[in-house]
Image (cartoon, rainbow, N blue to C red; front, side):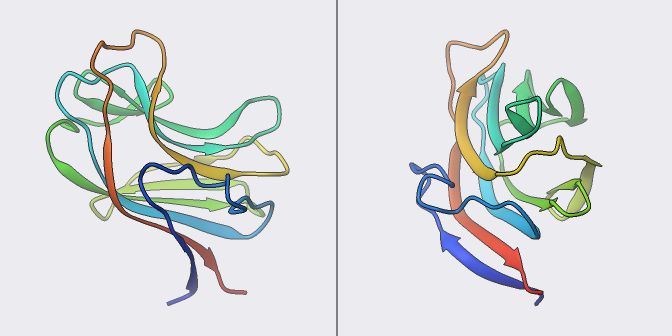
Length: 145
């Protein structure tokens, strides 16, 4: 394994608030998420920090779809547990998202000098009255040099 565990995070906490911010290297967010039916127009996970933007990545739910910002990457996200792995290679400006072991998104980051992972539920545009996400098994890793 090329990654070292950095933290086990309780779902009610935000990563980065306790010193898990980073500015270089390859970092991984790993956990299991659940979004109940009826939740829509929300961000459930993000890589905070960018240049000219607030975030490098936002995973949002619209209807029963998971999206990177507004671009759909996966259907049928509601009412099931899913495994989420997000890799951020700061030095190569790359972000990759895996759901249940399958690569569903690969893109470039938005730069910036300081980043951290956040998860939970954050109202976005067209948000529903019900806004909920559940998380378990959250771990943060940094790739060994």
